[in-house]
Length: 209
Length: 170
Image (spheres, helix red, strand yellow):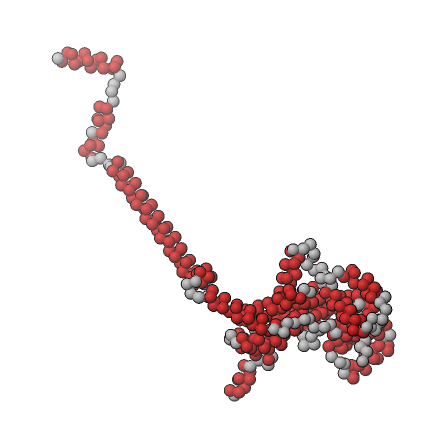
């Protein structure tokens, strides 16, 4: 019976177990979580704040804020959902801070969406560049197209990349309903398909293996 | 298969390979709806493009930097929560409660003192009035009308008769 009680007390999610230890002040447990999620958080932040130095500072701050807020973490919540909610909030604060110092609208795409299509056609005029260059440019185009999405669409698309993050998790992070989240992702994908149409059709994305 | 089911299969295929049964259902749908083939192909192509987005650059000592920042933060919190520090006085609920109690005591004390002063002033006023407006004894009041009459000086014309009477008596 004692074993059953102990088993019931221990959360199934290993992340939650580490956070419980962190709540008691165990920094080594928290460091395990940092190592596990550092790349995912950095990917998310970097696609929102394309300046590497600022993105790195912000990504580090996500974990510091998570540590400071560890008392408020509830075991019932998925750790990654909680962590990416913090990441999104800090990103939004950074975007607001930037817009206060510039004339840009807060919801405007980070990149200049209008020039994307022109640059796409321009690239097709290149004569037989090496495969790595094609791949690198293509990845740049995709990153640019994603950065050009409105904030909610961009956030939803980036979070949806992780197969362990369900649409329900994304809805919680965006603080909207499941149906609204699916609608946001649908619109984001339609926008990206339009912006990246030449690359979807020509098959330049195919790996030559 | 309805279009909604097709959309659901597409969402599923973005995250994991379809089962043989799901693949069969999809193939039947695409056979019956050729226009949907372009949608399917483009969606899968976009998924592959997104999957190939490279990881953002990450410093090799990223986690160390995070833990250093956390240690600094812990030391700062410890300093601020130290009793009797300025931060403690301005942020601790205990210190604020004490301060609020002192202010309340001073306010109540001041109000009570004011009340005492007003009462003393009132008592003094009543005492003064009582001295000035003391009611005279009954004997004095008995000749009150006579005294009032004595106080009145008659006009000179009326006094002539009295003067003649006085001279005659002398």
